[in-house]
Image (cartoon, rainbow, N blue to C red):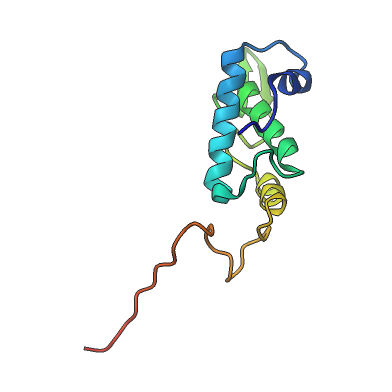
Length: 126
């Protein structure tokens, strides 16, 4: 399944990328999406999925080590983006879930992906 093309990711980052880096960012993004919404992604992806995928892949490539701040001598730089790597922000999770037709917030009827069988234990007095 193709979430985005290398040229789209390159245009977003405004820098040339090795194909291996773009492929890895795509696979990590796809894996994170499948972990969140299961097999609800379609081929081609639903409207709204590409923008979230590109944002996540760009973050994977620009901050793979999860740096939040760095210091050189007397200069300290802290980054505003608290998200690092392949972690989906709440906004990205909400947008992705809405794009594939899932409820965007947690609810008592939507606590697990549809492909997960419910598990219930009945208590009975002995």
